[in-house]
Length: 386
Image (cartoon, rainbow, N blue to C red; front, top):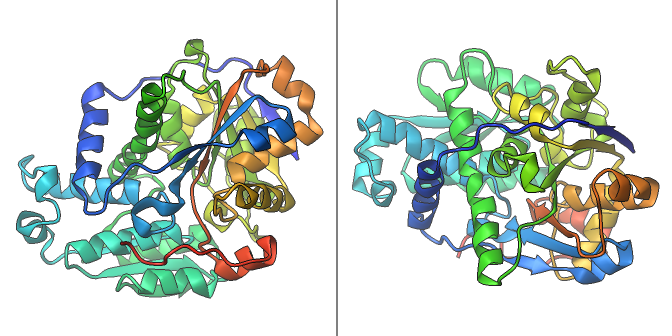
């Protein structure tokens, strides 16, 4: 495990309140919407000696086993909203109006699994086809899950960046790319996706307020290209409010960690050829729209070996939460720090007996065979949305 500390995290521009309201209104209008659980897991906290632990369980989001649909759906809505001249209402998105606006569109993206399934699901709601590109080596369960939404899956010879390039090249003429990684000439849709993830933190805020509880003190956020992390940065935008942010990445694909460690403010690419069990985080290059806000706002970056994710999966399973390898990454970083650098938590992040720590379980058992190998039993989650 490696750690890099940002000694001077800075305030960044927050999203205006009307953006938060628009995102929340849109997601409430989707069929099957319900806030995901916020679970107190103080048994794990007690074992780690860290005070209070809250787990936001995205494994049951719309029955798709992952949080990605929040970003993908909002991005598609905003694209159709723009096509309508700003007249498409959230409540019209999956109705005749939304379908008319989507007529003739084939949706496409590159994915490690969860984002592609989300895009395929949204395309299905609109009655449109989807073509999804996945890196070579993507497990069959994730490919089958994408196909179960009616999408065509193209397996690319190479890693995630290769899949991104292939999707962009083949989608120039007749497809709409819904990608969470921004690159030169492609920034608007990734920003919409980042905004879509705000619903997670907005729900947490409402859930804590209903219980009369304070906001979290420390938030551990897993990162691939950084889109989800950027949403956390812009929701908890001001370090002076007391919320500390820690970025968690697999050692085999730690592009944000390496970018922060370089110290010149520029993004760095890494080779993920070695692979990681945290497939949803197996990304080689930071998103150009996400990296600047993650760089400036996050307090620390953790790069860790895969076995920490396996330990986190087992601890969550013992507490009744089904978590995949990427889903457990935030807790994995906390476990690794407690084991290897306990002084950092107390001295640098000001961990106290009453500190409230938030982690987000971003996926359930999206690879059931791997889950069985790690946990020793299958999960009982339904595969399809109810």
